[in-house]
Each structure stands twice: as structure tokens, then as C-alpha cells.
Figure 1 (cartoon, rainbow, N blue to C red):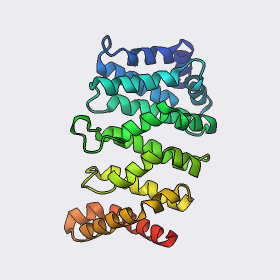
Figure 2 (tube, rainbow, N blue to C red; figure 1 turned 60 degrees about the vertical axis):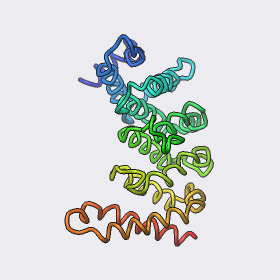
Figure 3 (tube, helix red, strand yellow; figure 1 turned 90 degrees about the horizontal axis):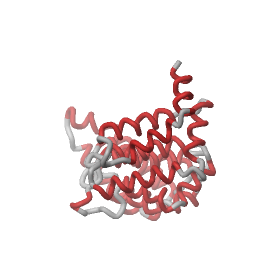
Figure 4 (tube, one colour; figure 1 turned 180 degrees about the vertical axis):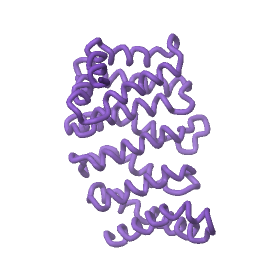
Length: 254
């Protein structure tokens, strides 16, 4: 079956083949490089024994595969060829699939400059208002999902949130309203993440520090959605409910 074929592929040094193809910007066409990373992501996702064995192979520090993924990410960013963020988004998904649920790996990744750098770059931290480096929506979405998963993790903590302070503050300042985040799905994911932080009491201090600004944006956005009519209002109803819950959580904690 597919599991046996996957095991055979990995045993034949398939992971290094996929990474090698993904690394070769000049020699390998972009669609093939993207497909290689997509296959790698499929192999890593899941909690079955064979998924875990692949995750451990990538996490093995001595063999340096996670560092290689980081190097590919930053090479793509530098070259500017990953205009739609697909390759960098796949790298983030592979990294997330590998480290999520592995407490030590999560902590090491978050504390490493390369790990933080990947998440910050994917979100667009430090690129606000910079016309030459707009971060693609697909990449922002993958990065935000990674950040959200780190809150859901059993090893999530205030200390980890503090390590990623710039990422969470960026989300609160630039990912909550249409003026700075036009993608409806990303805005909703961002508000969902803040709600989880409040309810799980992880990183609440950051939200309360930004509370006045978040509340002001939320109250304005609630008013904007309420003023809509028909289908436009129906489309935004979920975002409206999220905002109402978040505002209530912040008021209760203040």
C-alpha cells in the first residue's frame, strides 16, 4: 500500500532527494521544486508511526535537514522568484508538521534565529508599508496557522509567546481589519488565535498591552459590519461574532 511505498521511498534516501530538488533554483523548474516540498509535507503530516519516523529524520540536528529547509526559505526570499509564496509556504507547513507535538523541537525552533526568522518573514513582520516586499496572502496564511498551532500546543506558555512577541504584536496591529489585511480568512484566523490566547490564558499580557488599540479596531469593525446589508452582511457574520467575543474577553480581563 501507500504506507509501504512511503517507507521504501524514505529508506532509499527519498527525503534528501526531495530536499536536493527543492534547493536547486537554477537546475530544477519551480513547479517540480514545489511538488517535491508538497510530497515532503504529505510524508510529514500525521501521527502514525511512519509519519513520526520521517519527522524525526528531519528534526535530527546532526543531519541538518531542518537547517536546510530554513536555508531554502531564505534563498527563495532573497531571489524574489517565489512571487506567490507557494514554496516558502510549503516550507513553513513542513516545519510545522515536523515540530508540532514535539515539545523540545518546538522550543528549539522558536528560540532559534532561523526559526523565528521564518515565521516573522512569512507574516511580513518589519515589512509594513514597504512596497518592494509585499508578503503573499498564501504565505501569510501558512505562517499565521503555524503561530496559531504554537498556541494550541501542550507546551505553549507565556515564555514562548514572549519569545515570539514581534509576531503576535504584528498580528494585533496589522492582521485584524481590512485596511491592513484584506483577506477575510486571515483576519478571522487572527481573531480566532487571540480568542484562544485569552481563553487558554497564554500570552494574555500581550493582548492586554495592545488592548486599547485592539478594542478601538474591534468596535469600529463591528460598526462597519452591522451597517452592511444582505449578502455582504451574511458573509461577515462570523467575523462579527468573533469580534464581539474578543471584545467581551478583553473587557472581562481588563
